[in-house]
Length: 175
Image 1 (cartoon, rainbow, N blue to C red):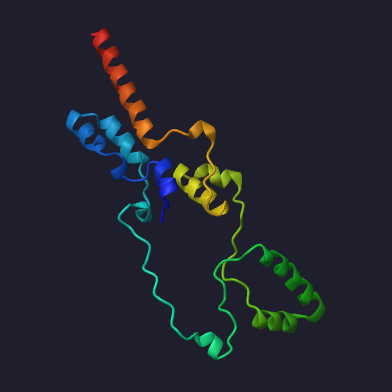
Image 2 (spheres, rainbow, N blue to C red):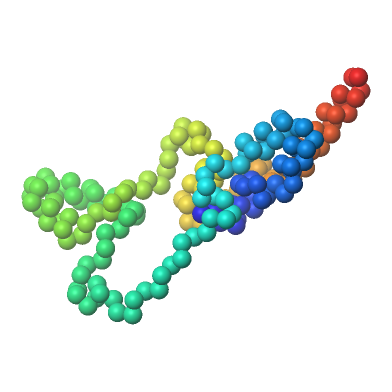
């Protein structure tokens, strides 16, 4: 799901375009139509009509507390889990597999490791929207913008429309 902050700064769905797609088809501007469609996100979860799942209310009695169970296994790692991975290696060297198995039973490791930094070569291969999503997740919900890319989708459409008008004037001048 996209937050309103990302949706306000990046072109994601056709609702943000308004009637630009219809006008491009009606006027026969196939290149403008292709450009606008290519700028849209191809992830269905980015669409405005996709909503977050409804969160069910928590039961009044917590069964984990009632039966004195440990906390569930976390799905993603945190920063403290990197130190724990080093500690597991030490336990393996000192006590063997039995020590590692005992520690894993007492406090299981998360199911997936989350690496805060993605290599630059990988980031360059992603679409701008995917890059913004990753940056947004890594900054814990703060959108950090480059001042050179502070153009809103509406302003970008105006720039495209202005350039189309200049091309029409050049075509009339040549003819």
